Length: 392
Image (cartoon, rainbow, N blue to C red):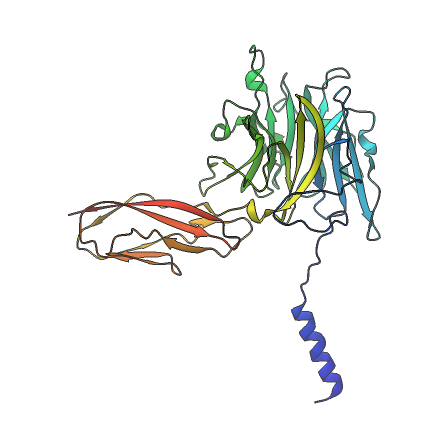
């Protein structure tokens, strides 16, 4: 074979075997595994400084995070940009200097920034949600979110989906009630370029605080923090939406991520591979330390029931086939799941895990409950009940 042709084929072969995408660079840090690590120690997460709430622009060329003042609880926002393959030293974010600001979140397209700002120069406990927009690469003047979102109480943080829907936490349901300070989670959608009246996400409400909300760009999952108990304090929780766009009951994130300290301020990288969050250490009822941590999401995302089937009635002695939806389960970071049915299934029932099909011929009447289990590549398992009634 001609030498030139051989070289040409070799180049094509190597090109086809090489991933077209490069690994994302998170401030030059080595990737963590399934145990959370302090993010950029001594540079972003500095001992004795109270950092909180980090977010990356979707193109991976800018990061932004907050710093809390121990003396008066005012806040500042710092940012760093990547130029010529090198990250700049994090500096005070110029568009918001001389303001008391907190918890910045980039929008999924990177052209907007949501953040909280103190209502007054002296009251740093109560905040409103503001927005910056980037026009031709330049941040415009800040704007306060409209009346439909604001209240007289505290709006703590906000996160945006790809279609512009805003999720946020607020104490508005407690406003004016003595001894009530708990926050709940709300959302508002755009219609004809205007934000509508806010709606409470009642499925995620409890007697305790729900705040620090992060919504995924596709609105398929939501992460927030809640006070759990006196042992583990504040933990991170996750909720998924099913095929009917209903939020499921929230689950506490894996214990390899949550700790006995206060775990808050979640943010997930645009590729769903890393979770960033803030861990606060409370000593003798005082905030002693606050650092930003990060961890792989292999223990964060688990299979969830997306498209279940209703209870089914069969006739005894008659053959049947039930095709389960291919999207019965979903997993944010794992497309290939394995399935099995509980071992106590009736002898007359067969399950084809490849075709997702139940079949058989019932030989007895009664009510039967099957457990369908989905397992992902990280060995995370989720069960779902399938109820079948057999009648004569």
